[in-house]
Length: 444
Ligand code: UDX
Image 1 (cartoon, rainbow, N blue to C red):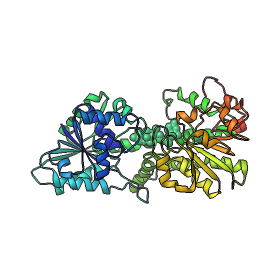
Image 2 (cartoon, rainbow, N blue to C red):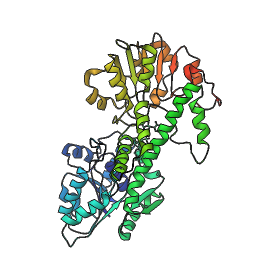
Image 3 (tube, rainbow, N blue to C red):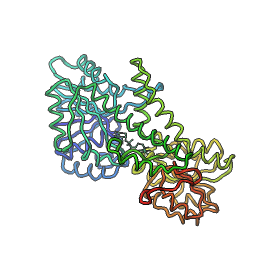
Image 4 (cartoon, rainbow, N blue to C red):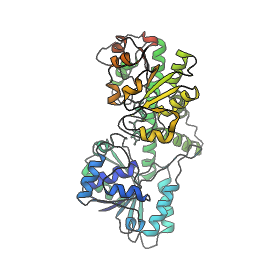
C-alpha cells in the first residue's frame, strides 16, 4: 500500500510514522518547506515522547518519506489521509478551509483510483460533502471513495495510543473502501468498528464531549466537596469503582485545555444548533470549564484581596504533562488574570517554555528550574502535573519561600502530607481550609 498523509500536525505526523512502522510505505506531505527539511532528518516539529526515535527508524528503513510537492504526494497513492487542521471559527464552528483545499488538490493530481481517508475532526456530513466536492472536480474515469477514520490519540502518549487504542472507527459508504482501511490497520491489533460515515464523524465528537462532561462533572463535585468538607480524591475513587462509571477521567483540577476538548465541544454545540437542537448539557460543561480555569485566581483573590506587586511562580505551562502544547492551557488564562492584577510572575515548564515565550513575550520572567521559580515568591501556582513538579519536596517550598502559599490546581500532593508541613496548601476539592478528613489513606 502506498499511503500519503496530507498535513503533518499532531495527528498527521503520528499517524504517518506509526503506519510506516507497521510496514506501509508512507509519504507525509506538508506545504512548510523548513518543517519538511527537518522531518527528513528525523527532527519532529512537536514534542512527543518516542516520536523522533520512531521517525528515524522508519526513515532509515525506507518506509517514511516527506515531500512538499503535491504531485509526488497524490498522483499514485493508493490511500490518502487528510489530517490537516480544522481550527475554530469565531462562532465556534469548525473551519473546513484546509480540508476542502486538500480535497481539491487531490482531485487535481490523482491519476488512478484512490481512497481518501478523513482523519481531521470534521462536523457530521463533511465526509459526504468532500465526496461530492472531489467527484465534481476529479477526472471522470477515476474512482474516489471517501472514508471517515477519526483519531482518538492523546498528546503526550500519542505513540502508545496508536498501538494500544481501545478501538479504530471506520465510517464508509462503500464496503470495499472500508475493507481496505481495515486491512491497513489490522497490524495494530486493535478492535475495529465499521459504520457509516456520519456515525463515525459523530463518534469522534460524542467521545470528546462525553470525556469533557466527565471532567466538568467531577470539577463541580470537587467544588461542592470544598464547601461541605468532603475529599474529592476519595469521592472520585468511590464512584470510579462502579463499573458503570469507571475510574478514568475523574481527576478534578483546573479544567480541560488543549487542541481538542475546548474546540470540539464548541463545535458540537454549534452543530446541534444548526439542526435546531440546543445542547444545554454541553453548554453547561463548557461554562463550568471556563469558570474552573479561573479557580486558582479566584482563590488567590479571596485570600489576598489585592494582588498588585505580589510575586508569584507558575509551575507548568503545557495544557497537560508530556507535551509542549499550550493551546487553551489553563496556565495562560491564569497568567492573563494575574497580569491584569499587576502580579510579578515567574514561570517554569520542563518543555513548553519556548512555546509560551511566543505568547507571553516579556510580560513574565522565565526561570531555569522549578526551584529557581519558587525562590523568594509570595505564592506558587501549580498548573501542570509534570512528574518533575510533582516530585518537588514540600520542604523545598518551606526553604525557598518566606511564608509558603501553594495553590495546587492538580492536587499533586497528598492532603495529609501537606498538612504536616508549615505551608498554606490550597488544592482542589479537599474540604474548606483543610477541614475534610480523608477516608482512605492509600489514595491521595
Ligand atoms: C483528548 C482525547 O483524550 C483524545 O482521545 C482526543 O483524540 C483528543 O483530545 P488530549 O487533548 O491530548 O486528548 O488530552 P487528554 O489527556 O484527554 O486531556 C485533555 C485535558 O483534560 C487536559 O487539560 C487534562 O489536564 C484534562 N483532564 C483530563 C482533567 O482535567 N482531568 C482528567 O481526569 C483528565
